[in-house]
Image (tube, rainbow, N blue to C red; front, top):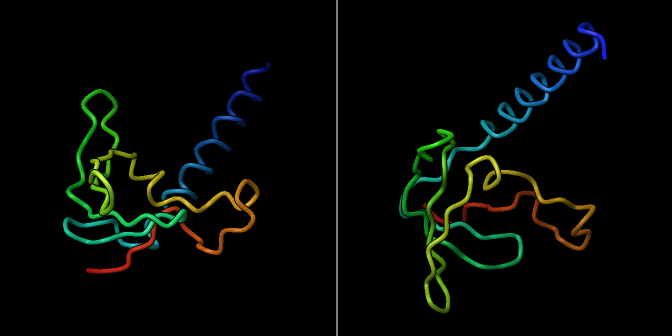
Length: 102
């Protein structure tokens, strides 16, 4: 590939990341003690937002409100992302997780 082509690809990737960031900012980030529902139906209580030591990525730390009350960590960007409706066409919920309480 030519340097010009590589620069165009980098620009497009950068624009795509910025578009995703803006989309994510349209909704408030999760806060401790809020309850959020996963698109598959489980409810989860937010514990905190943590920072991954190697990459600096923000992680949502949350606890299942069913069965063994397992604790999970997921990147904030994925937590706030939209459901892949091509993969899950029957799902009505727009986002992977949606807040149900304050």
